[in-house]
Image (cartoon, rainbow, N blue to C red; front, side, top):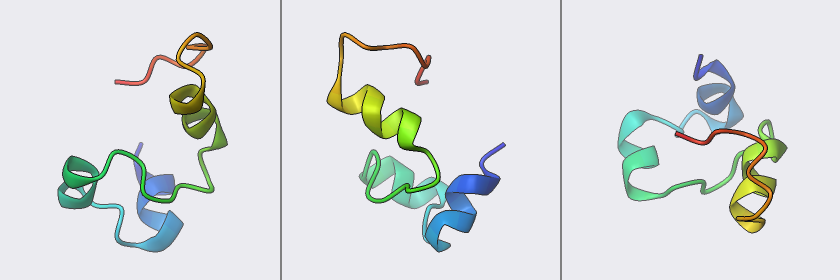
Length: 46
């Protein structure tokens, strides 16, 4: 499930995601767009 996050840079682990919400996830532009647009919550970010 989190393969894209880990493959993104390799540092996207459970520890990094805890400290930083989304440091750099080019593989998940949807989540980036969701964080930028709170009113555009088309993707249920858990």
